[in-house]
Image (cartoon, helix red, strand yellow):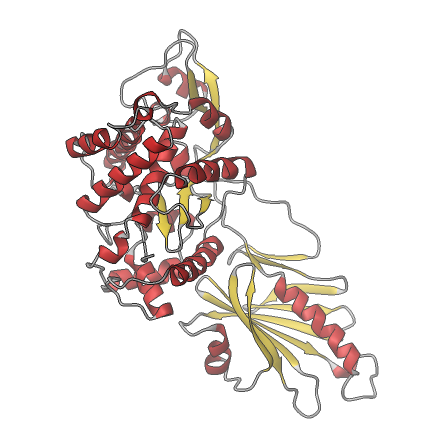
Length: 490
């Protein structure tokens, strides 16, 4: 299998080149095993930096549609992974090793299972057609490097990072490859029993969204960005696309009579969050929270933690041990090399690499000086920062105050507490509210219903009518019919 990057800007590609020593133009084929390794590492990075939508019902549904398509794809034996990113932005992409990602925001603009299949089929096609190995115009300018540092270091929040993914840093695979992916995706859809016209419909709806955003941004003086790069190469009424899609399903009766899956899609997406999610989990006892850098960690009974002068200081209540957390700038070195080169610690006992809640790290102990106890050291990379933990046992306050060094079993007990606290370190997704945050609900339209009336009743603001028309596929001028199931935002 060849490396595949879909609409991830090429600063991600540069990152992989750094990590794995691959050529920047990615014209080199790699093994399926290596692709899986790269994809897994990217999955760890993406899911550490981006919030994941964890609703089991919807995740199972999206994965189920993906698995149905896989059976009819050109590479049905690959181990695909489907993930919903909890972002309101419109996007979908794939990475090496057959990892497929769909933003929650994109699902809100779909109205049938067939439309979901169209997007997933397109993603699968880019994987199976080896488009990345055929793409030779990767960009490596300073703007790309800046993007790499912004996304991989976590300096941008979810919304900003998603917007960056849709920026014009690269132009994707070009029109020919995008049309080829459409053709392969349409064939896969048809084989799986979906009507291929759904591909035309979803592209048209998202082009309508692009049209709406141009209008909205013109009103506010902002520059328009297209987040759904998957369709950016298609004009509004794409004759070539229509011909390709029609040809793809011409020999398959299912393309004409297949069930679009409106009802199961409606059931699966009922109560889908709209806009930026605002739910913040209730705070728990014996857990330290940092709202500026968005992390937390747990601590056992007998410990207290507080922030002081850019440090987090933890002490046992009897002052027998302390744990200090310093937050420093991350480098391109591995966490192990960071300890040696940046912290100047050349020798680490019990040295081991670790992954803490999908974050890369390294830990070990530093030999104590003058017969003192060893110091637990750990570095965890999160965003653009290196989180440096030091666990110190105070021999003078330990069990035997007359001894310069506490017993080995007591030291091990303290060290176990240090390691437990460090292992509980985890990111906390930044949460922010917007004026139109709500939930997607399905209702039957009354005979007098119009989108303008509904928008006023639901207090959706200036662009509420447009948003309701967009998510129902009725933009810019159609109205709901009496008895028709439609989406509202409540």
